[in-house]
Image (cartoon, rainbow, N blue to C red; front, side, top):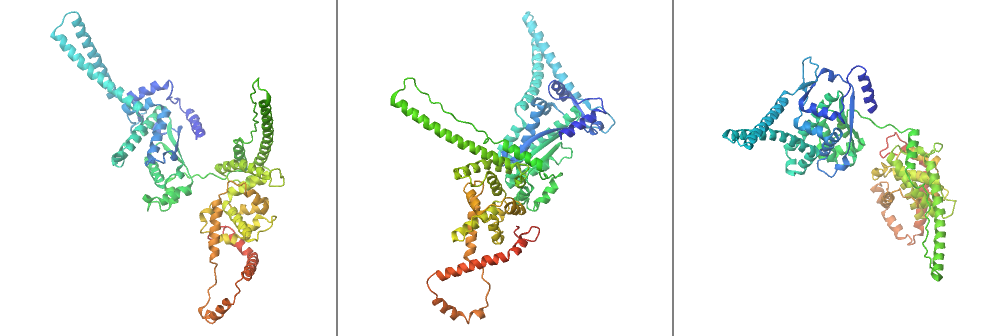
Length: 611
């Protein structure tokens, strides 16, 4: 936008002879003169101007989340930003003595009209003040020479009255300017909001509307004065972290400010549309108006812009910047130099020397550990943003997620180093950073595989350590498909399922032993997800589904089942053998039906729960 404004400015100056007026520095006295004595006229020449200046104001909705009037915070931020940019004195003078721009239909090309009433009024006050001072001087001078008379008292009375009236008028104007200079619009609106009784009345909205209209007229005045168009750009962030009622109030305030076709405001909403649409649909006062949040946004947003997918170079650059922001790679030695007194002798000196040697040896050992940790962390970070490695392809196009991964890698590597304790046969730093990415991108699917692995270990049927973690997930994916309704919110946390299959199946085939080793040092995986899956799986196992049977067929065999039950041995060995046989048959049955499960979970088909 700044480049576009600069280009328009150059193109406009090639066709005209005038230059834009300054509003800062030595241009302030000229601006004050125009504010007091001249009135702007909107002409055809001004309407044809294409050069524009953008004024950027940032508004974080989260800062005003605690207030009942979030939109009032938007208005106060707008007023405060314009006041800070142009200065408090010009806006205060315009609030007291300024006049809104006028529009003429004739062919007059003059953009300024002399305010005769202000000029005549000011000349009248100055003349009255001069006359009053003159009369007081004559009366006081005659009294000092000893020529006191009734005429002198009359002159003194008229002079005092003229001086008082003219001086009070000037002082009132100066007082009003000073009041607006020290009491800004932000303080006015905050005082109105603090009045609970007045805030619920119609007068509150009228007062706020007056302040906004005054601000708009001031910007229109500056447009004619500067000989360029002005646009105030408000960048609204943090709206998707507020309550639904606050979001609705702020959107209504934005629509109110944009209701005027000549309003010089541009709003940039930096939000997640899905969260914003859900807030609109759940708001109680938007029933019937925003039942479909996306349709309401389409009626409000005039230029939708979705951030495109991040390219390879951009992603690598962001990852490199996130890694460089960490200070874990900086290694510093901590040396301690104990202070020894000159007269320390005997046993105390020997004990102190032994303690110093012990501390020095511990420090050297800790230094070696820190140096090795720093080397491993550096290796892990290099694998993360290495262009020749495929790991960066699984990192999401989100700066927040990138920083989350980068912040987790040092902790995971240090815990893994402490767990190994000199054993170099465990997971490598590349596997550690890959495991961090896996837990960050697919927490639900990874938790399900780990929960199934834990259940098998508890029942004594754990797979070998060389078995792949992907095979464990694939064998139990059909059961996860039946729990999509109960785990819908958790499944929404996962990324692309095809990338998950490629991650565990081809690029990073973690084994069961490696998963168990890395699980002990995993800090970015919510263990409550596994506990929830375990409870759901246990409850579903209590009532296994059974096919319906006909009552007619059950009647003849009721007595036979009773006798068989009474003759059943009390020992649980046979039941255990039957259960184990059924489990093995179930696994065989699952292996036969696996191609059907793959077809159910392939994206693009009508699957109720997704992959």
